[in-house]
Length: 230
Image 1 (cartoon, rainbow, N blue to C red):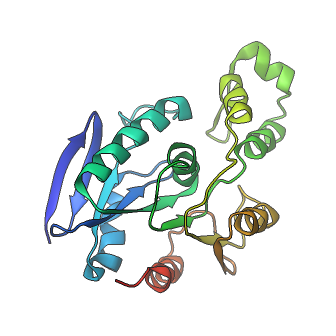
Image 2: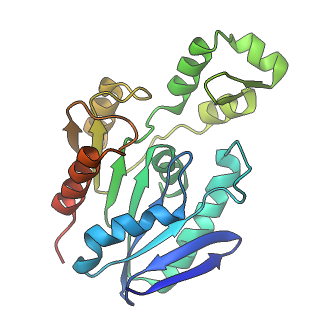
């Protein structure tokens, strides 16, 4: 298998597979990295795609990843992909799917595969504020609050997501959701998939982060089943 590490601008990237005019961009979730694209390539590489994974954080020690930093980087990556491929698809996890929808809402995407996507970031931030017993006035005054569940609450982030709602996503999309997802309510997912005419698959007793052998097998079978034919 061909593997190449390189940079797109200042975005650390890795490419898997032989030269093709079709590519999947793999965008990891919180705590993930570009190497996760290898597993996805192992699942779909025989279907004629290359897979490019990217690190959305510049450094491992960066604790917070803000959309006003990430979205311009993703747009730069998309520009590179459009110059080098005839067909671009997206495979994204969790917050990576949220960033993808912010960055690529005006782009032509062949297919999007979202796993545990964050579809209402404002609601998620408000939920985390409740878990941390933080009011909006507290957050406005302190600007940033570090929680005991390893999340950083940011007032600037809250204002950003209010001003940059996902209003448009017209690309063919398939969503995999876990029944026990603790970050996104099932009604949010159903509303999103209905509004955007997306396919929805729910794994019973699954979790937001697909990591057990059973969950990964379910994920692999789903990825194969929803992949568009050549």
